[in-house]
Length: 299
Image 1 (tube, rainbow, N blue to C red):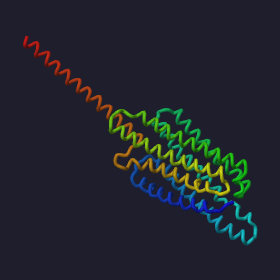
Image 2 (image 1 turned 180 degrees about the horizontal axis):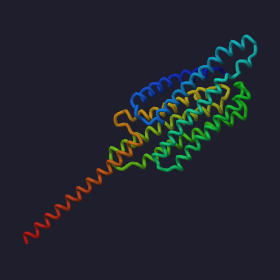
Image 3 (image 1 turned 135 degrees about the vertical axis):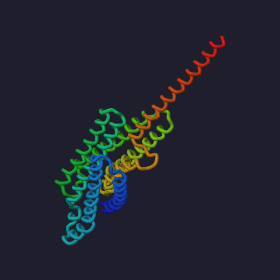
Image 4 (image 1 turned 60 degrees about the horizontal axis):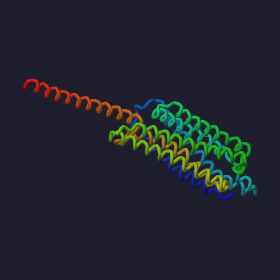
């Protein structure tokens, strides 16, 4: 076992991301008081769950670096240093809840954009599998109750499977959103710019969470007892929370795009195009009629 440095680094970085999500949550409730109650409730639950997860993880760091060290030195038993506090298991459970809730929201967005319930259900299935695999990790953690569990075969296949499924879910959701949005391009410059903004945001969100998961699985597979991968774990739920809040707060910025605004813009521009075409055809018909009338009069 190398050190508890990655725990401290992860806790510090996650606190920074929590500060950003706090600012985003404040802006959301300030700027969108008329949002549906289910959306506001989801945001509140996700945010406060993430705050609680951060508190539990901070207690875990304190346990390993202060309490465990003091108890280990007092009892002259090095195994005391590896004993896991209950807050670490609670942190994993809250992590699973935040990730699943945010991914479910984005699955709903996939359904809205693609108008294909089967694609959305496929994304939701992966999110559900990830939830199950994340919660299954609690089994060996509870039975072993020490950090040595990270080097056991059961824990290894469960966490690698969880990270692999999670990465696949993130990539699939981002890909489905991008494909669905690209299908809404109409050739009208204004609506196409809105589509391009949404595509860029979906890609950034999916790539960001996927890269963190890939780094986590790579570091765990190569050096599980160094706990470098724990730093990535502590960031993941914060990235999901910030992605959710950023997607909702984008509606406030000038020219920001959402799936609803894209649909509305596309419909308006298509209607405008139809009206302009009709007016043009009517004008041409009037001109042709005038010419024909003039020709008959001259005859």
